[in-house]
Image 1 (tube, protein in one colour):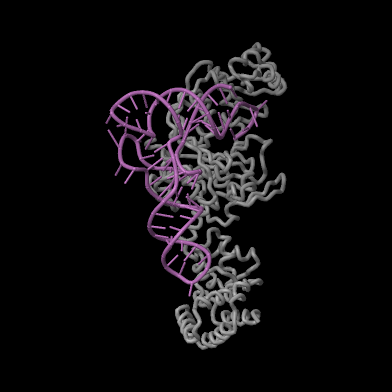
Image 2: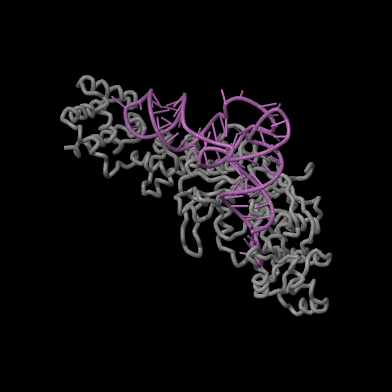
Amino acid sequence: MAGKQVRVRFAPSPTGGLHMGGMRTVLYNYLFARKHQGRFILRIEDTDQQRYVPGAEEYIYECLKWTGLQPDESPLHGGDYGPYRQSERKEMYRQYAEKLVEEGYAYYAFDTAEELEVMREKMKTPDNPSPQYDFRVRLQMKNSLTLPEEQVQEKLNSGVPYVIRLKMPENETVKFHDLIRGDSLFQTALLDDKVLLKADGMPTYHLAVVVDDYLMKITHVFRGEEWLPSAPAHVLLWRYLFGEENMPQWAHLPLILGPEGKLSKRDGMKYGFPVYPLEWKDPATGEIIPGFREFGFMPQAFVNFLALLGWNDGTDKEIFTLEELIETFSIERVHSAGARFDFEKAKWFNHTWIKLSPSATLLPEVNQTFKRNGITISDIQMLEKAIDLVKERCHLLSDFMQQAGFFFQYPENPDLTAVQARWNEEKKSFFENLMQLWQETETWNAAELENRFKTKAESLHIKTGELLLPLRIMLVGGKFGPPVFDIAELLGKAETLKRIQNLLDRLK
RNA sequence: GGCCCGUUCGUCUAAGGGCUAGGACACCACCCUUUCACGGUGGCGAUACGGGUUCGAAUCCCGUACGGGCUACCA
């Protein structure tokens, strides 16, 4: 690795919305690249045109933009190793597959889908419910190992559909080293003859990753744990094609689990928490699934909790900025076991980030939230102050609506019952007196207002506790919010007095 | 079924042979707060099970159980 520039890649296939598991893979790749002054590449693996979903690629860019995890090279950002979309690299793969055939590491196979089906049915036993196309069966199938040379040539020339399959050795042990899991051994006798080049001329994942990782000079591959079983096939391809000594280092990341096992894209709807970073519109069904952003998450919090889902720096520190993550991240400290996602903990991260953020930072997003809820704010300065006053009680950005909405719009249905039960003439006259007192105040600030309030209450022999709740209902409309005199200060004299008068009238 | 990966409080995790197994989320109690929160203090709560190795095991080895992944001309 010394002297060699670190190059890592995230290689999604655009078959739907990218969920938080994919985003964590992005994050770890990104952190590793930044930490080692390397390059982070985004490569689109769109070799399966059947499963291609329009908009999925754009969605990925949006997610990367939102989280700030921007690639250095991608179809969108360009780079020296393009194209970065596998469909546009189609012609590059065939030569490698054919080289393997020439050298005896692969072969042409002409079996039709029906013939494969027949083989599987025939070989199926209770002990072996899913038979593989492997060294045990390949000599019974229609391929360049069983057919005479002339017949193979004839088929190739006549345009009969065929695939190229890897000829898995019958009895070898493939040693595989993973940066997270250490060494493991695989017996090739148990592995199948994977298709490398499909009948449509597109490579499968197995050929494409190896070829592209080589051509793009990838040094480290971080991908999901689900790829572990096919890793030995990739090692073999590296050995045959480019030399095992040139192979990148591997790390297979643990899965993120939902409440009932592997996190699926439907879990979001099912359990009431998001699985996508951003809102995802399924182009097939038209279904709209809200993401973390729509739930009111800050991107910083999203990145933060994602990083900690399977990794920690070995200390008790939990709140990290992106810069801090870059500094402390190490792939060796990533866990090998899967992590269950806990929405409550995720909200705690967001809450902490909201408390930590200056109100100016929160301002644009909160302003948008208000706008979406039909409240257009003209006094931005006031909103900023309101945010300061209420942010410690907001777990999600969407909570600002509930927590600070009353500053800009008195609720239609104030909690009158909270006042009525203990309302009387004395209290009423207290508030009439108070309005007079506050009206005369020249220094309109919380301390002064509280002082005048308490002095008046004492002189009328009413406990302040009896009066604070009515005042809160007058100004807020409910039993929540920051200290009531702070609210009055921010509301300003005219609005405060108007609200008191208003409720006085309604209490008649 | 086969192969592979995994297993510490309910959840995320620390402790990579040596203190009463530490922290965070959640939950409970108290304090602060004449609202709701924040904050503070304390409580509840775990090494899956069985064998080894060792003076000593959460940690190393083996087995069992459980969980997960893979087993496509999907990625």
